Length: 120
Picture (cartoon, one colour):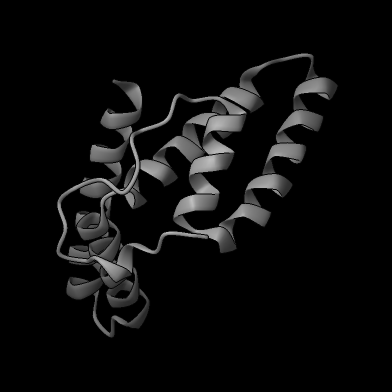
């Protein structure tokens, strides 16, 4: 069963603890938070694995884990997830630069928060 942040948009409590940045822990978290994204996780994991093997480097896997760690960090708090979705809609529907820039700026702030959470 997946947990959808939109079901509890006013909550400041995390739906799940922040998982370690490992393939299995992130796979489990992504599936719990947004089952629709689980297939994308798998596809991107296999692509990162292939690139790591071909380049003889772990950088593609580290990049993959960090990016999906931010995905989880953004979505594990219902209020943050709801705000991100709202900002993405605002940006997509913006008819002027001011609105688009304001939404993009706030999205960047949310991404920075998620990045700090992942790095902690």
